[in-house]
Length: 302
Ligand code: SF4
Ligand code: MG
Image 1 (cartoon, helix red, strand yellow):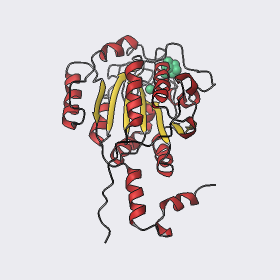
Image 2 (image 1 turned 180 degrees about the horizontal axis):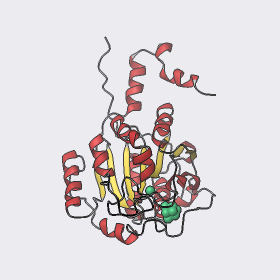
Image 3 (image 1 turned 90 degrees about the horizontal axis):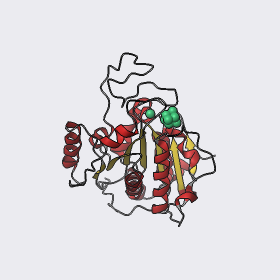
Image 4 (image 1 turned 120 degrees about the vertical axis):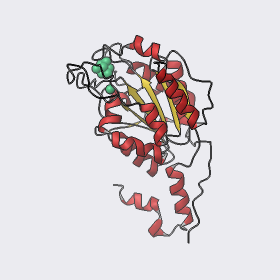
């Protein structure tokens, strides 16, 4: 009978590294986001984080779904996968499991992640897929010109809610803590310093890192503008034990009661990732060709 799996907890995430400046990670495609869009801040923060981590662009995969935010991989020097609406997570999971040596970053919006792709988010977290997920949360569908999203405030008037919404918004941070994400942080997209720090630490974290960046959409969301998000994120929650899930939950609930957004690194813990457990299983079954997962994956290669 097989022994139970005990994947070693190694805090050091393996990444191929080089020395590059932030601007070296900027691809040549001109940005086609609206002037003043919060996503410009997210891109700046991501480029800075990539430089600080020193990720080799030849070993970096940026996966996205559909939406304004999902255009981000066009602007980053990396391998890029612009996939189907809501399906960035599962595609990125396949990339990460087939090539655990690659750095995998998902960038996408609130509608793409939590509505169309909502069924996938809990599984990325509970499986502890070794990737970084940056959610560009503007509380609206921007690309399709302003419809209510799963994170929209209930009172928001949009083209699909002319008298205001009827549904309570989803809380991405609490959701991810509940479903077992091993790294959770949040910041205002205009706070590039904090946003890049969270992305950097998320990229170096071994496990599923979820970073929610509140990113304003000046074209279709007048209610949640930059000033509003900035004020909500004015206080960084950095006094609690970030390794304590109860403490992280308490910080989030307390911030909500105070009418603000929980901000900064909220939770970080180490537990085995799915690729670690798979590698251990391959080793445990003795490399028999019928059980070699890498050979099975190779069968699907062109
Ligand atoms: Fe940004 Fe909104 Fe313009 Fe899309 S529609 S690019 S989210 S400002
Ligand atoms: Mg959106």
